[in-house]
Length: 92
Image 1 (spheres, one colour):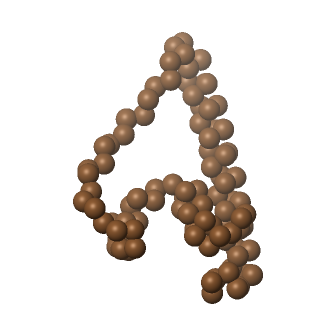
Image 2 (cartoon, helix red, strand yellow):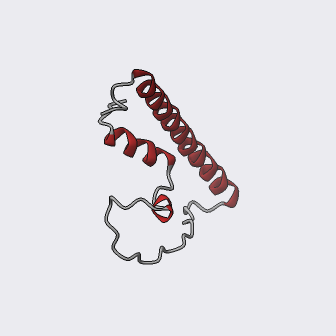
């Protein structure tokens, strides 16, 4: 409630959200172009999957517990700013 009362902070959060959203869209478009160029150079039109490490199964921890290991759950900056906007009930 305290944060919602400060319009300057809300404007900054909205601005950060817009910038992050724009960056993610540009990255996605850039990745599409790179994939198209790679397939045309390689001669194969199959998209190669990116290998990912599997996450170890974590033991149950309530959502209200805030520790350093909880920060690792949020890897995507767009997801993080969306979570903040949802928590503060801000519609950017």
